[in-house]
Image 1 (tube, rainbow, N blue to C red):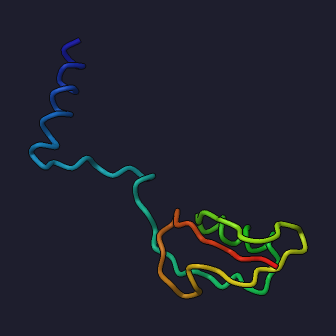
Image 2: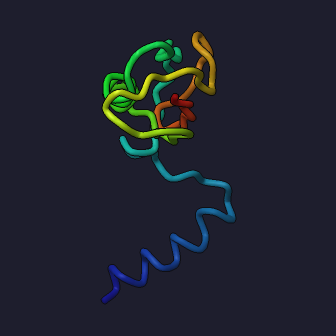
Length: 90
């Protein structure tokens, strides 16, 4: 019981003292360069972006034959893993 009380008080006091918690692996974001996924099919573009740890939002048709016509952020932009990428299809 005493162990639980210590955690409660530390949880209240440490932020007040501006002591930051240690980052976990999930908190650490990797910076990557945005690839160019335009002019390729949607399936390949999704795989490329997911393999880099990026989130995907699709605007347009979502078929196996869909071709990516544009993307945001653009190729070459530095982004963190977990960033949402919008890809536009035709």
